[in-house]
Image (cartoon, rainbow, N blue to C red; front, side, top):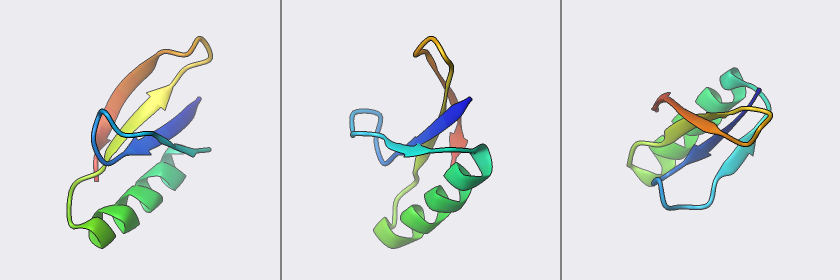
Length: 54
């Protein structure tokens, strides 16, 4: 599985290798921009599943 973070569902994603990486980068980005960041899990067939918010 791979993961991606987004500031908004319509924004371009930022790819992350692991969930821990996505959470860490999401927290830093959320603190920097002052708004929540969304985390998605990407499966091998290209589907995505919402995981959470940082």
